[in-house]
Length: 252
Image 1 (tube, rainbow, N blue to C red):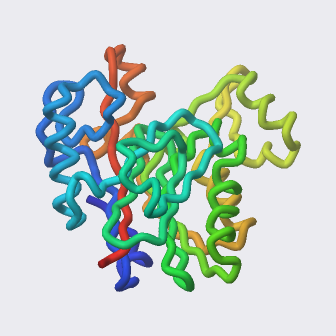
Image 2 (image 1 turned 90 degrees about the vertical axis):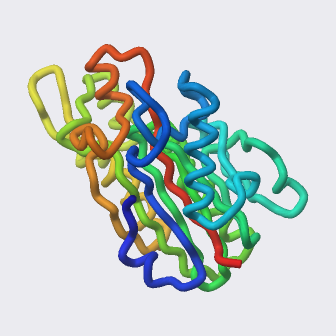
């Protein structure tokens, strides 16, 4: 379990970037796999999510999760929609107390958000697709929709590190077509491969939106004992992969 030093100082919220340790799953999913989209046994995922809920002091029904598709869709949870079992989005925002917002990742960036002024929380699933198509901007827009006088803090959680994120020239060109300034997020590995700094790409977007950013900086690809990694599982030719969960809630 990993925490933001900054977020720990806020008395009104509870948060955690959970590692892959301390759960019930076996084999490639060992052990705290919280990915409902994985092929792990449903019983084990349920037990893992129950454990997470307990740690967050909410019932499992109050742990709000997303059907994540690398989109730029952000949803505000209100009294009307709070009982939905799954939200089709890549970001969640709420002012409701007693609800925990969860995001699952395996290399992508989990971001948790807290508007100190207005007691609004959020979580974001930011892979390169969602980040480049506006998931971060859309999420902050929704915060401002609820209240425009914000002081928003973001904690950028464990994700794939720049030295681990190898990409081809086609990937690189996608970003350069959008803006030549994006070149700063890439390092040359060799003539056909680049290294991409997803953490900095995401973080700079938040800073540009006047969000105060801190980092829980761990490389999910390299730290095999602590995190699931989609890329690592591909490299090892595994059939599937687990997902870690990051959660935030407003205290009752």
